Length: 528
Image 1: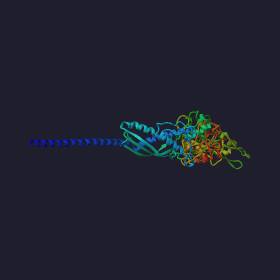
Image 2: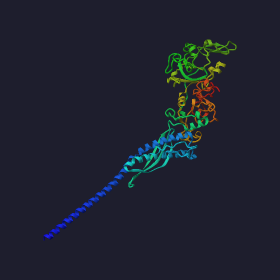
Image 3: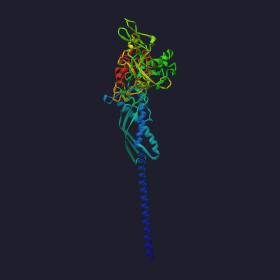
Image 4: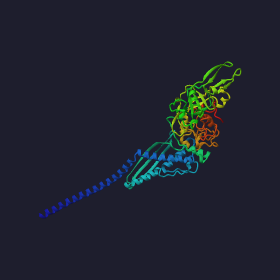
């Protein structure tokens, strides 16, 4: 009986041990399975978490940096050789191809350009370089980029100073064991500004025409608030009445009497600079300065009418006094017009009789004398030149359509600051990258005027139109324009000033409203 009990006890203990061992085995298997699942989950979570950090915003910023740098590099390359033009229905084909190559690899193929490929290899400025850097960072967590693909790449313009682009970027990540992967497609689009870039068309054309030593490097700058298009750049004829005068002149003004708003008195101006000013005042104020002072000024605006004395000389006539170049008459029966120096001031310089003229009505202007001060400037135009009035004094009173005082600071500011503006007759920025840019045009066309010491080689430019797209076209006859650089006075405009002489074509004269001040309008001339 004891032996049977002992046997049962032994069997019972054995069964219990078997159960415990089986439980332990199941538990171990469960733990092992759990560990494997957790490991796979961890790997998958790491890949997904990494992809979540590469947000659309970060990809947009990365792409913008790369594209901005590469557009600048393409622009620099186009200064040497134009980018090839595609077919008429896709003229930007090679621009798009080159930018895609630069985006992906940091280099553009030689076949994208008209000449030997400029040195555009810069691998760091590419998506491939970004992927390589990303892989170096991801290695520590066992993840790598296994693919990146760019598709649907487009480039164009969304404004006269903007280049827009768009593309799809497919990015894939994997772990090193190749057991977990994830991919995402990003829709990238943005726009790039061209402000500050050098105009590649102007560089190529000026270098090919004038030579390396006087190549024109002009940066793109815009003032779209004041000069959104050519029609917004104005010349305004003032409502001021004019009774008489001779010649024409553009200059800042000085007062013979009390100082005006931004108009200094004659006696406070450096005597060496009075030759660059128009003296304004009543006849008595000007005369009181004495000839030693007023004779040094470039021209005069008399703000009082002459005194008139009625005489009978083949009918009623009026002799003048207290004015410039006063009209008198010889004795009957001839009654010829002549000048009586005893009754006024005699001058061979430009002058205008404009009763009650207030210089404060004129535009403000920068004083180009090194002082960085602001004054008030005006362009005065009479019907006849000084020489013509000298031959026939009566012509000083001749009234023609274009005689008057003009505000020209808008066009002067646009020209002298080198701004670009919109004109559908001109090439767009992307067309500036292509061959023969000035024979292309776009609704987003941009143009500028080229004048200054860097473009004053008369054997090249002569009196060509100073509009960039017309500057090198010798078949276009330029018309000089009063009041603009190189043509501020008759003496400068008829000579060879260091700035070159501002001139335009008939079409450009109309586009910018320059008819009133152009030298071919029949008023006082500008010389040959």
